[in-house]
Image (cartoon, rainbow, N blue to C red; front, side, top):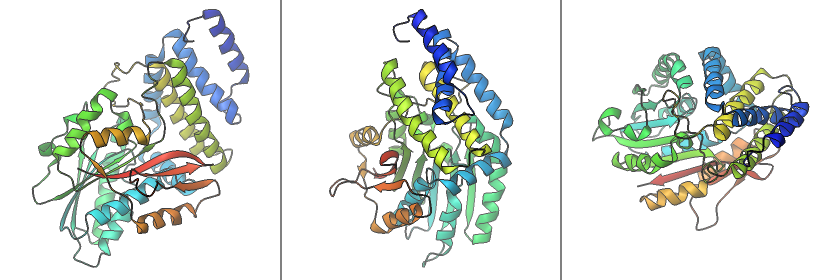
Length: 368
């Protein structure tokens, strides 16, 4: 493919087509989705294919379907709940004793992280603080369901007895456009920034600017969770990018296959979400803007984020024993195969969720 040999390309696509099926076993599904991406690459149709896949997904997404998908995924796998538990623990410790909290949530978790944090705030020994939650929507699919989420969050906060304000920020072309004024940050608020699977969607060239924007908000703490893959350094080398993409999604599909029943609709929805990402990573130039949908899909490993954050003046904060114990207790609720990878004694640059000893999700805590 990288050599633009049309004869070899046609032969490869024909062979893959014989093996591929989106309804087969793991290898057949991977063959189907990578075949789709390779065909788009060969025919220079990646942009059109990706826009079509996004459009179809948006039309089929409703609040109920998204909610059911997220809750089912959280029930069978710690892929997302790992980051929730680690980040919530770090946020509660960093904000302890503060009367006015302002959490800026830059993530794609659709607020599923926050009910447990609200419960924890309601049961604090000291006076219950007020919480302002500002959700920065980074994808159009998330935007379509936020109207349903807002009243539910407000109702739950009232039930918990936590003074609560909820704000949604949409319409951004770039995360670096966020400002203190636009986020409504007040001088008397203890600010925290929570980023879950969001920074990898920022254009690589914009990432320093986004971290500098974080600094300008003077947060007490920044929590960052992302998937452990490098689609950034290999972006100019198709073969390396393909190999890393195949490595990551082979692990992910294996996890889905062992976590869900064979005929699960939720599993199929998650696999189709992967198919969009594979097309985006392998066939679309970063310079192309997809109606500002803000999904660069250039993920980076924890070590790469650590280097960038350190260079820009952030210091890592180690997780406390209590938070680590909470994460370990979480993993015990799931089937075998999951483990927690802790850093070395003097290394505070994060912890990893591992599937069959392969690190798959990185979680970390930072202070400016």
